[in-house]
Image: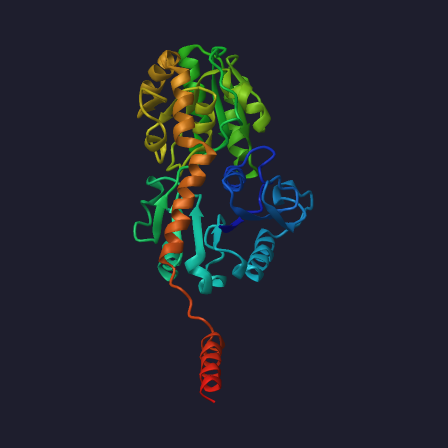
Length: 370
């Protein structure tokens, strides 16, 4: 199968540090290649991939030191490159929200669009009502709730290579928080949980410019005033095995409809249980009492984090391999692609291709009777 993967251009593929969507695209692309498919990746030039790379920008937007740049222009340029090659592919898989809809109406029946973000924004409904012909994939069932009428074809949970993170059955006794410092991620809850238990908390987190005020006024004072808390900063894949694997539990105390939450399966890959608030996708990812605990209150979270060490870390790793490997993800997407191809009507052959055989038959018949 000839497949195009079209990624956002904000982060490298895979990201050097923080970044979810581009990381998933990288893992999916390589897994599809490993399964024997002909894959082309449209991405920035520093992408690391086993697929054929079409570089559409010199570097990822967040890594670009240029003070002035247009993310819209960058993505428009990429779409133009995909459009030029649209007839070369059996499937064009977009991970760029809805920006391609007006340009690919003619090819809608060969596109798959995975939506990676939250869908409860005011203006989204009108877009999906206007372009219902584009088949959509959600990354959790919960993600669909704001747009139940949209053209959903499947839910495909994220996955990643089974050998990317190292299993660790000997944690070092601390709790971990990994993600962004932002109000919806509730790092304040993580600090509170660890403090109530008297346990160390390591926080590996990115501080976006949009959340700088929240960091400076709320979280940083909490970190600096608490000897149990160590702020590590932003980390990359090569550091996550040690960080997550050494933790007794990952705290995932979110307060928003998280569409997936990649860090949960990263922790599971290391054998580390997850204590997650029952919000967004977490009930679909965490098997309560098996791979972690689902909680509704801070008190429940404290109790769950206190008994997380009792869970079987080998069993957690095994559940990750079964449910969330990149190969499992790729196979689920291949089911989506196959269904799309099966539903596509066969194109009528050009008129010349029909007339020419008829003429040859007539000529041969005439020659035989002459």
